[in-house]
Image 1 (cartoon, rainbow, N blue to C red):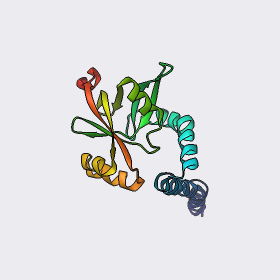
Image 2: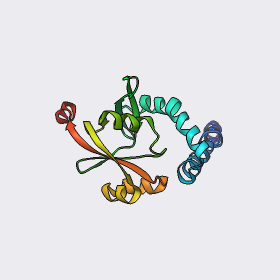
Image 3: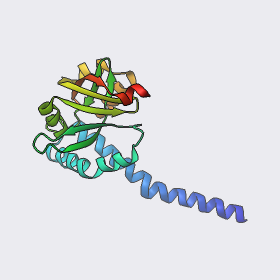
Image 4: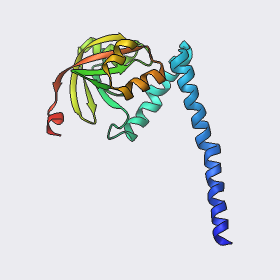
Amino acid sequence: MEARRESKSLWSRLGRFVLWIAFPLGVLSTFYLVVVFRIQIGPVNDAVRIFNKHILNPVIMILDRHHWYAATLRHKGRHSGKEYVTPVTAQPTEGGFVIPLSYGERVDWLKNLRATGRVTIETRDGTYTVGDPEVVDRSEALALVLPLARLMFRLFGVQQYVKVRTLVACAEAEGR
């Protein structure tokens, strides 16, 4: 009888978790994929970009210490000179990286990269100084990345990407 009560309690807790956590997260994720990235409604896209910049990006920086999801882009402010760290999806290519421009070319890190000519990307494989940014369309970006990245890029429906060339593989990358 006691084991049955514990089992029922476990299923009850699991049901509540699904109802209150997993389902809403699934709905929000679907909304995010469909509305923000695919439809590209300007005001919604800008609101999500601002939310990500001030709330989600700092959380990712805390949770993603080993770069399983995101690479970190270190760049200097074009006006302030202050150093910023931004999580990005950077897919390695021969001689560089491809980074989706989910919010278009108006993102601060790209403006800073264009102004300074170089930034540092830290991935699970090492740290690299990159430069020579070139905005490319979806078809060119898809041709440069591995099949799994192609699938993800297609799923999110991003149309613009920035291709950067590796200028220097830093000592951290060589020591690993």
